[in-house]
Length: 285
Length: 312
Image 1 (cartoon, rainbow over the protein chains, first blue to last red):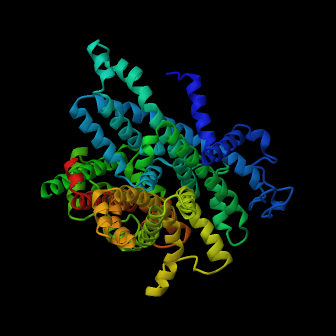
Image 2 (image 1 turned 135 degrees about the vertical axis):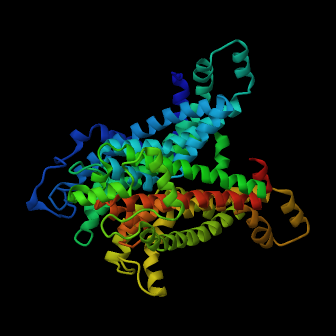
Image 3 (image 1 turned 30 degrees about the horizontal axis):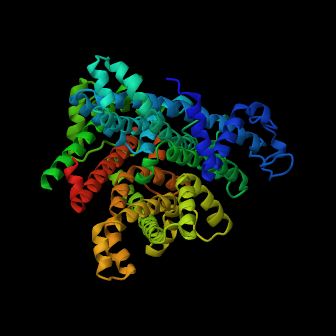
């Protein structure tokens, strides 16, 4: 489903007019830029050790100092952004696609299917996210893929419920009834007529969901249950920083600030996007 | 009301049943011999045989599930692989630590959040309102474990105002140990609750009974404090109930960062030692806690606001 370009640029212009939205755009843009061109941006190899220069404070050589193995913290922060997005983007888009499909089916399909899917959503939601993640990691073992899958599984219900509610409110509107009267198939009604009316709200939800996902990945890596070393992840930086907290503050600062910045950026962007896409939602928050 | 309560708790039970069954099947679906996974490479053949018989792994899966539920209904969550103690007693020994942390976080953040939200709603579009809004958004964005680490760094390691590790002995010492962890967990809730209360307060202030109160010449202060706030804090109850899972998740991190005893610390320690019965027991108990608190929040909401009952 290709949206006309003018509409997209209209939305972006609306976001950029709002100061918070502009700030969000800049932060998110910077993070994506750094992640895309990380290889050329890092001053040092993020996993190259240099024991001689370990645990240094910030200097012109090492902007954020070095860790216990002499690795450059700044380079690890930049590369960490890549890891964060590598987890967050597939997880969020996967959850959105599955949640959207199931939600539309629940909203449009027969009542028993609706009840079944809602029970499914409620069940997944009934696990406290981190506890569920820990249980799965304990069983399957830590890896980047596990983190993506866990995050995806836990956020499907959010998208599903919203997609269902939207579908329910639309299913008896005149243009859908007209389509039905003309004998359009269910796939056509859902894909061509419902989808464009739901996708905006879900996109806003996704933008707001990305920080949660980034934080969860960082959290799991901090616990040593996410991305494996020596892969530079913000959570892994915090893990090292935590064990060395009495020797140097710079690892905790270097790992913590990008997480806070990323959360801020995506939250600002999401809030502003919501006001532009659907001003009605504003009151419900 | 009774009808609604029965239905809501029926749903909670059904959800819990499905969740627990899914978790049980998940453990069984993991490739490889569960006994080997549970006991790890350290296991002796006798230990393996004993556990196989204990878990009834030689029985068909339906029977295993029945045995599992039979034990669960008697409050038996299994046996710690290493110490041989009952998982139930281990988990319930740690639970109070986690609960006190969660309640401390809710109490301070809800109090501050409601106060800020009510003030912002009573003085909309002033500087303080704007500042509250900006701070709210920023705080909502801060993940609990990053706040925990930064506050550990600043207030415990550098300024040394508060203790860095443990849960403390005696009432005041315990309270002292609760400050930083509950700060980390509660911080993101302050802004969230403030925004929620502000929005619902503004809505309530436009309703007829407030207009009536104004017409009677009551003071603005009395109207806000007594008549409006009472209704405006309703959504907070629901949000806290539904947010229980989120609070539990934050508590896991706060317990690790501040080396506090509790459910989260128990789970992490058990994962590293591959003590699966304890991991599963803790996850089960926390899931149960979450399901019950969500149902309770719905019930309280339905009790306070009859419209919510009709909606179902």
